[in-house]
Length: 120
Image (cartoon, one colour):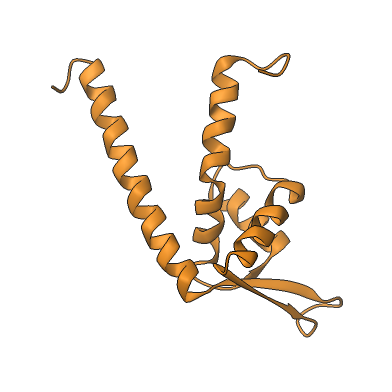
């Protein structure tokens, strides 16, 4: 554990990092977006605070893996921007990941309820 980081803070960071790929895919679900637009969307619609140095490597990996398609667009702003969109494979991965997330969250909720004496 890094100096100055409590066990809870380290766990929270690990949980956040584990969900970033899903969060990025969700941000691209309704429409294509460029990198900074993805970051702003996630910050606006959640309490995630993201750095470009965190998001862009994930976008590059998802593109390499065929889950995203990246295209440069110079028409919508004064300088070209790389827009990302889900591929069919990416949409299937998003659906699978969302299902897994819900199932895992339900499992944890049952465990919390059982620990609190509200479940068996």
